Image (cartoon, rainbow, N blue to C red; front, top):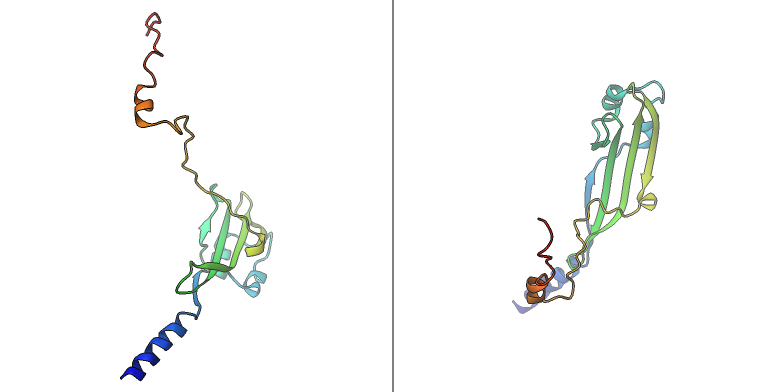
Length: 144
């Protein structure tokens, strides 16, 4: 009984050292992208050839974006992105392909998409200092 328990604990400890891989998204292969002809294919033909995009451009009719990501994590660590691919297909105003680009993890930069921080001038003030800070700063003679 003790031997089986020790073996079970040992197997559990060993399995905690195995990485866990997680895949998200879809990016078409180079062979699929080779089928797209710049200057000829349109949004509809691109969708038929390689499927619907993960995302479209912020501006109306600006481009298709296909994104895939692979993460590796251990039981005791936060996940780490080990592969990332973004395929960007640009279109002109008539919906015809103008450019096909592939970007990898090495091409990316960390971009803060949203920062909801408001600078304040009350840092270091106590609650009472904030509450009574405006007493005496009113000018009674001014028109309201």
